[in-house]
Image (tube, rainbow, N blue to C red; front, side, top):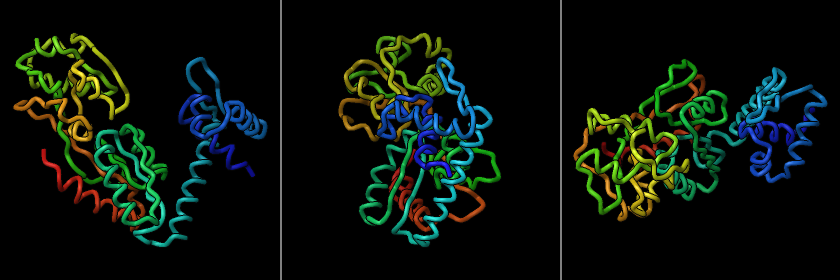
Length: 294
């Protein structure tokens, strides 16, 4: 039998693509991670092609990753059966994009305070990762920014979220020249979101790439920090702006044409949601969806 720790190490390495980051996540040394992979390869043959900037799975590596995910899914089903269909106990796993994740996380903590027997595992990820995680049974619930077309998934509209142009509190934006003066604070979805919103707000503009870039971060909760310091503007979803602590230091430019995204709730269609997941959806619908307006 393959050691479970070796499998967890292999999965973390595949997900993160880096021995150092895998070691940090697992609280191991890099040498221990390497040793675990050597043990696996001594039994199964080469699992990884170690290229200069990325790791690529061999066919044996893909087979082992599928095996690990099947074990996880079986373990999750076993735990759910042993816990019974109890809405107040057991594990609830979900994965969401960053903006809506910031909005729902405090409400998930409130749910767990009310039902301490729950263990909530909430991960942030882009929509492609959300869909894969739900399909692979690594998460029971997911929220996605595009509607997937896969018969294995049950998909329903969760809420809608507008894109916003956010500037420092003391700034005005009357035209494109004001954006040039302020400069853009970029993020992984920044160019896409800014292009979609600004093309409607300022038709015929030269494009987001022509604006000076005054910063970049891939942390959703930090995008507005430089904006609050007066270092530029950004475009991001409303829930991310609402979660920013220094609301007095920023301002949403009003009166712009609306660009609104839908957020879709996903779970596997072949079996019903657990009582825990159903309760969480109802809980969030009242507190997040019910309180939102676009």
